Length: 354
Image: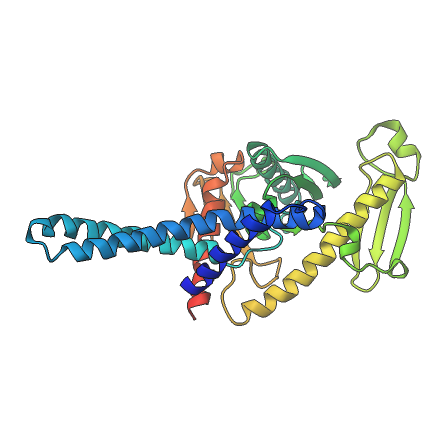
């Protein structure tokens, strides 16, 4: 690890020199690339220098042990330096972990009602509100892409786009089966029912072109939009349905009055879904050799249970139970998302040590 850190520290010095040379801005693309690299390396190298300083402090304190008058002081300094080195080494290991290239991407969040009929659709609406409130707390933008409302409220299926800093990094562990246990509003005898929804978190492709979609592989249907939206939305064939023939993926978009805009949005969702399938295939291969928080790619895998009578939420992957369900359903997800990220970091560190 130290040899690699030495290389990165030397690279930072090299970047300092390159950025200060005359003509550094003559190629703006290259200049931006260097400044991004410099910004990424800066905090890591600063941490490495702190580690080197702690190591020097340790050596100096050990030299003082031979002086009887300084022995007690030296022992304290040695213990402090060793503790700092252990902490700094852990922080350096975390910073050296391979970065997820999708972490800073925006996402498409898809929630589908599963077993449980109307109650499942109502819970899909509750999950959408939970994620929307979490997005508001993070100052992310929420855009409705597609919705299929149920008769009693909630959604049979809903897709939103979340735009902001690090959206995928915070929500990438939400994909999977979400189970709810509660007494439905329609239940007259007070019995607890269990129903479920499926959540999919899909990183947005930079451009639709990033995913190879052959126009010949698409079937495009237009139809009259239904549901809310006023008279105009129901009088024109503005809604668009895309079918990707090789994979069978179907995307509908009808939220805008413009057929052109609906098609463009549907293409973005389609690209994200194809990218998601490719990612899950890769994750499935990884899961065959080691445990993965992101899972095996099986969206039906139950990851979490929301028990309303007991006011608790349990994440089954990390055996975390929180008795603060009201706060969680109101978008207080930070404790949960941090715990999942920490577990994932521990998993990556363990894999590096294998």
